[in-house]
Image 1 (cartoon, protein in one colour):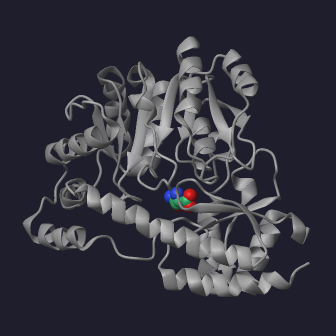
Image 2 (cartoon, protein in one colour):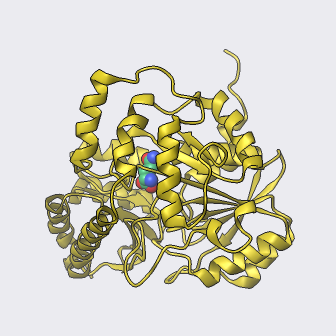
Length: 385
Ligand code: GLN
């Protein structure tokens, strides 16, 4: 048999998805792969039922159904404060995962360098490898996950083609301040670098923190490729609806990459999700309130279980420090936790360049009863000295 490509040997399978499989195997409560166990809003599921009969069932326009793009442009304009042309500034993709990959393939040439903050969402490593580029890691230092301006400047001196910015950040829960974004933006401008954002948690930012869109900072629209999705905002991670927002010249490239990668996102699902994009402000306030409650509920259990963690400012993940357990490795600890305690988490080594074996990640996008059941199990760790 011929050998498979070298490229595929440079990265391993997703540890997040692997933990879901281990969790299923042991019948554990799965707080590893971040997705809700509750239903999307009824307006979306009712609309999906109607569309099942009414259609569309054939391809939408490759870069997104026109009415979906119009509704998205209107909604994002409302939140980002930028005028977006649905025909020139948007490509609808299969989730933010494809949006990021398409953005990287559009922005980078083989051999280009790309700044990746660590801890990072594991997809970014595969994205850089598949686009032939090379990551330069810049640490976000716990507990507040700030970057050192010197370290970031040093990374920019290597003349990267792009910087990947996950804001609010998975897995750290960091929300970048306008001041931090300004520093990144100024360096990007000085070194003529693209900023590729992943903003899928844009509506899950806990008070008093606020989300600032990089693309909305003065002068930044022209070098920012904003990626996001409807997955987290409307609890529809399986619908795979994401998008890229960028200037026309960049969108021209993204359209071509996207066309040959996937042709398009599912037409009936785009149609059904439009009601979500038309939701009033109250919907986003309720979503945030619900996640704020879930966060408090779950962190309360971590406190009672005697676990040290960094409190998230946004998104729905929490990094727990497992040093006191003196684990053989964070993976071994996660396997033990899944099997013996009955709760699955993701080992921190899949997110960190440094501090490997020190953290594990839980997510709390679950029904209150699921979080309570998981929390009760974690209390068994309280006895640990
Ligand atoms: N974003 C989620 C996580 O980090 C799920 C990602 C996925 O499996 N596609 O867990």
